[in-house]
Length: 467
Ligand SMILES: [Zn+2]
Image 1 (cartoon, rainbow, N blue to C red):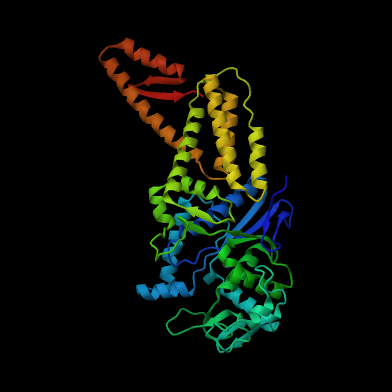
Image 2 (cartoon, rainbow, N blue to C red):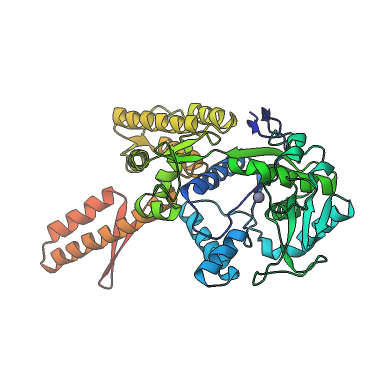
């Protein structure tokens, strides 16, 4: 089955057909690194992670690029208020960004380009727009003339004539049209700057993304993603800059993530209901947060509350308990085969249908219920069924949704077993010293029934688990 999803550009649910068979190239607008990111940003980061992992699940070779905006007004303002350099702010919060996405169990991007490392490419693209007569200079600033790109507004649905006749809200009265936007900004005193053909300055935000996406993925690529709030003007401007410069289509599919509200209110620092991902992850697991996000379709508004997050935490516990039951089930020789194929097809049906993660979650919890009653019915599992069930958890709940980490449990279990074995061996040695060989032998024989073999050599006892 093909993947279908809503394309903001065509405003339709469309079947995904990659530019190159078997490959998907995705660009996602990354953070402006001036603060810790909040749980609304985290939602977009997690949802694009799930979408990316699903493409991998379907056998696609995915190239995923996410930029870091490391020069911007917000960074400069923060640097001034903290009395440090803008570069220092960017360094601090870039590092925090990487720490937090790791905690969120997000698969690292293939490339994390930074604006400040692409200044030459940015200047080149602006020059190209200047040469074509699409961009114009006022003092040390360069602006994009939106009337030179007749398709301006095609993503957001805004009308060019409305934007041209719109009220002048901008301070720069010299601009040709009110909605013309800056490609290059002349440096103000004490601001960081780079040399350019137009004097000292720094890039505008929109041009950075055009440059970093096309440089890493080609002039035309498959999917561009970002938060809903970026559709206008950021993404509209990216299209205008890129397509006017290359004469080719830019991103073919656009995915946008919905807003996050807290207890049905807008999240804001002034309302006191503002959470960074970092502080939430101090009290709750990444798996619970990911589950909460995935329970709402990516494009819809998501209502967040600590109570809902606690419910997700409980659901994750049920999931872990079920996996534990499977792992520790008594081994049976014969049993009817557990049918996982129905669950795979239901899961894929849900995900192929506009990445319907709430439905995919329902399939997983349906699977959990079925597995639990199957084990209860037979009081155990055959090795084959156990493997099949764990495979489903691994491929779906772990590799796509990232709501469990089987390797982590395995590590934990191995360590636990090791510690328990040390205790048992110590007790047995104690018994042997006290010449209570009946107990020492009983321990050895009981362990043997669990396929654990003890070996006494030169006064040291070791164990071996025969699988
Ligand atoms: Zn962007």
